[in-house]
Length: 303
Image 1 (cartoon, rainbow, N blue to C red):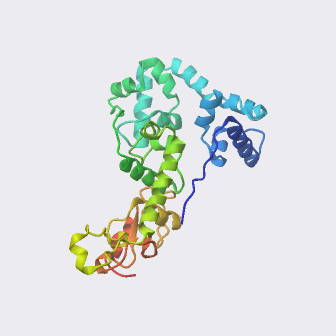
Image 2: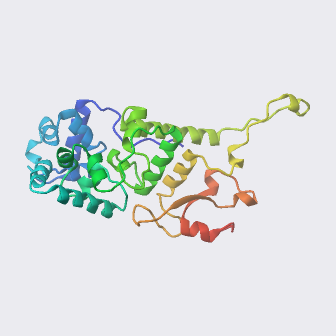
Image 3: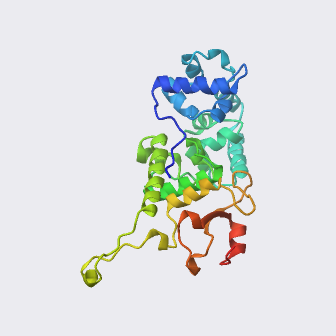
């Protein structure tokens, strides 16, 4: 079994514009908003903005300038910010922190919840970090070097949360604990980071499915290196195998149907059907997705 990523393989200008036209055709209507495009496209709007300069410029390059809705949120944000005092802006920053329930916020939080944007705040205070410091919030940490394993585990957590490949901007939001810059710094682009994750998943699946090494001649066993333990005899479930089970079960609890994409606070686990403690194997046929409540209620029972 091999999984493929539902994203563009070609990121040339022509491919991006073709994807923009495809999304516009699916969306229909007399206008194409960023939200509608994100709903139907396999590429992020940030990629288009970086490549063509702006969202309107991308539409114009695709021959779709008539679909632009002529709304300029950034301009409105700057205009509103000019009418606000420093204290009012800081109060807005604190309000957004309360909404997201964190001791720190990022630019994406402001875009989703604030009446002004991060650029307007930077223009007033010099940087978003400076505004956070004045607001008594925790400054976002930058520069930490995450291990590949930490990045992949975090990506699996966010993928499970949404039930689909997460977008670059969503890595700044809960439940992600590793920011998007860590991925682009490590792999060059967000798309390459996703492909690296898929390659890791497929490599794990291949290792689990491979035939374990067996020493052929008993009398020479002591002279041979110890045979690797069969992956099926390990309690720990590899990242790739966990992803495979979660995807097979549609990122939902197979007993109650709970899903983090639908209900806040749901935690999913990959569980042995026939308990490992009773001889159950760590293989896909003996694994299933359970929510935390169903998994704790099951214990070591065989169901």
